[in-house]
Image: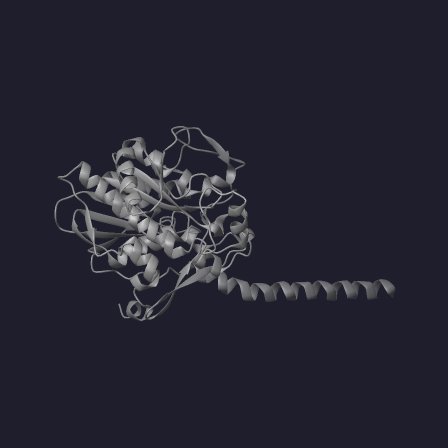
Amino acid sequence: MNALRTDRKNLLASLGVLAVAVAILWVVIPDALTMRQPDVIHKGPGVTEVRKLSEFFDGIAGTRGDTEVYVLDSGKPGASALILGGTHPNEPSGYLTAVLFIENAMPSAGKLYVIPTTNASAMTHTDYMEGTPRKFSIDTPGGPRSFRYGSRATSPADQWPDPDIYVHASSGQRLSGSETRNLNRAYPGRADGTFTEKVAFAITSLIQKEKIDITIDLHEASPEYPVVNAIVAHNRAMKIASIALLNLEMDDIAIGVEPSPTNLHGLSHRELGDATDTLALLFESTNPAQGRLRGVTNEALIVDGKDAMYLAAHKLGRLFVPFGPEGEPLKKRVARHVATVQAVFDAYASEIPDRHLIVGAMPSYADVLGKGIGQYLQAPTSIAKQ
């Protein structure tokens, strides 16, 4: 009889645990699935067509590796450039900078290509162990717009399992197994490779087929990372990076230039510069929501960039960048990226006068910093009417 009572108690306890688990899943799964719904991006007046990445390599067609390529063609001769946002979707300034170019830019010479969600799969999930929110909002004059805050890596739903050791295909470089889902360790990619390598291959193919002159990959890094608030340039792009630096510093925008390491493979600034004729650059801004020293990770940290732990670390001299009470707000990081992109375009024009890429109608560094990102985003209501 005692054994029967014990079995009944164990059964009831098990059912209770199962009920709690089901209740949690009932709440969590629908919220998680919203990450698979793409953010709506407004096609600004400069957008002449929207293509798919699979047009350049059909091996990603029908997968979450396929994504939109916004083309802004001035209709006049000039240089061509590709802006990559969302390579790492937990680095939101790159993504939002790409969106600002799509919704505002008006080229008057040359052609601009923009991919806002370069790793579209990584936009569909978060790094749960990091405790980050799934979305964040930016206020616009017509109401708030919501954007996804994704993961550094391709979703396990699209590529799994990770190997113990990731071997970069063309160089033989060995990295941690989880890096196999890091798009910025997969270039130049392989047509018959992993999901992530196929996405990298599609981007490389776009650059080759469209004869892209300049490729800019937009990123963020934690305040304690040594390469931050910097341009990382392939050796062939060092001259225009250096000219851009001088122009930015004349506008009181402090920035550094770093050469792309020849012995670190898979990254856009190295492999795209080696595999194609493009001038490959990568920009890093400062994102305290990524760092190991941060406190509470929430939407406020992502947007406002204020963190007491980083402020304390700065006072102790432990950071590579200044970090004051105003923090590193998202608007400042986006403003920095917008200004640096324009500075690179200007530097290229100064070096190759007959191949200008002139992109007008974009806000300046002071504009974005003073008025905020939302002033240059379309309101949700206007997007809904498209």
